[in-house]
Image 1 (cartoon, rainbow, N blue to C red):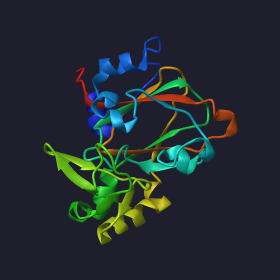
Image 2: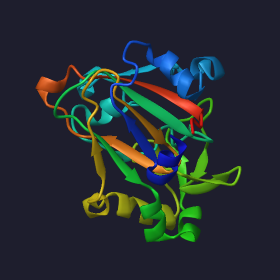
Image 3: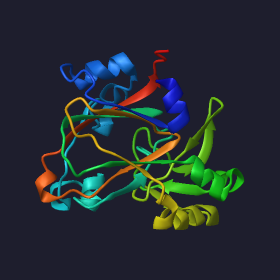
Image 4: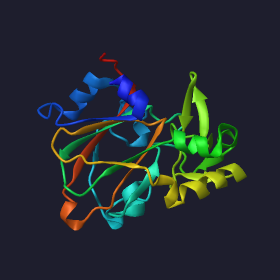
Length: 225
């Protein structure tokens, strides 16, 4: 599992143990971040339910509250936190035929703009609270691992380097080589390295509003080799 994560930044597992709960599966895969215990004031449950919703049905501090059924842009989950979760898994409960999770390696952004510039790309978190940081950099490090972060909703660019990154991220040409993954059947699971991989979602048709995905954050993925 780790070899694929290291190589691609994500791994897709089809119809994985659909008979067990998402939390039980997550605990088999890695160390679960139990956010409701670590940060009870955040209001984030350990297992989050993701369903397509119109902007009027969701809060503005959620992606659905900003984009509704439209495409979700590529981003880092919880990019405004002092340290975003290392990994997360998305698991299909009810799948649809025409909605995709989009994936893009942040290494391509690093190669395009360079590490020195991204280290000076300073952002202000638009949301303050437990676990959140006032100022963050697009590229930082933690225990000798690079952490790339980007979010068009929750991060506000401050430096000229941050504005340069925003310009690149707003250009559709940048993401022509993104990967689209379909979570169509119960148990279909994708594990994403949140420090190295951006993700998003394709637009949702009215016929696909039954889509139901569950998400769990992980601090570690066990090596099964």
